[in-house]
Image (tube, rainbow, N blue to C red; front, side):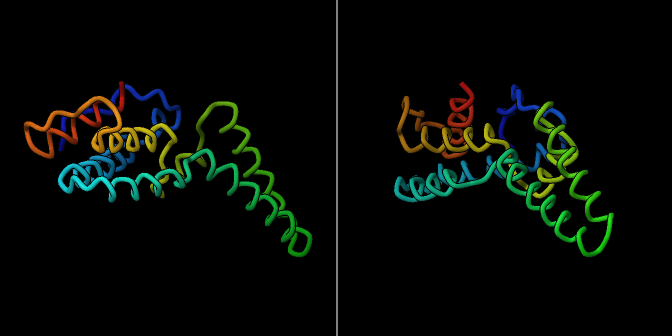
Amino acid sequence: MMESWNQTSTDAVRAHAPSTMNRRIDAHVESCVRYMAEQGDRSEMSRYLEKLEHEWDVHRTLVVGVPVLALGGLLLGRRSGRGWRVLGGLTLALLLQHGLTGFGPLSVLVRGLGVRTRREIDLEKFAIKALRGDFERIPNDGGPLARANAALVAAQS
C-alpha cells in the first residue's frame, strides 16, 4: 500500500462512511493509478479518463435513484396499499437529509456498493492526468509505484 494520500478529504460522505469503505475505495484508486504508471501508455490513460468523466458519483446516484424508488412506491401504493407509499415518503425524507447535511443512510448504502464521491473521482482523474504529463512533470526516478504515489499526492494539491 502506498503512503497515505487521501487523509485531508472534506467530503461529508467520506467523513461519515465506515473507514473500511474508504480504505477499499482508496485501494481501488491506488491500484488503477499504479497500473497506469506501470503501463505508461498515454492513449490508455486517455481512454480511462474518458470513462472516469462518465462515472456517476454518490450525489448523482442518489438524485436519480431516490426519485425512481419514490415514484415506484407511489405507483405501487395505488394498487398494493399504504406500505409502498411509505417507502416513497421515507426515501424522499432520506434524500432531503442527504441534501441538507451532505450525508445520510442512503449515501452510506450507495457507498457500500462502491459508488465514489465526486472528489474521489476527481482525485483519480488528476493523478492520471499528472501521470500522462498534463501538469508539472512527475519524477521518473523510483519506479511506477513512486510515480503513482507522486501523482496521487500532486492531485490533492
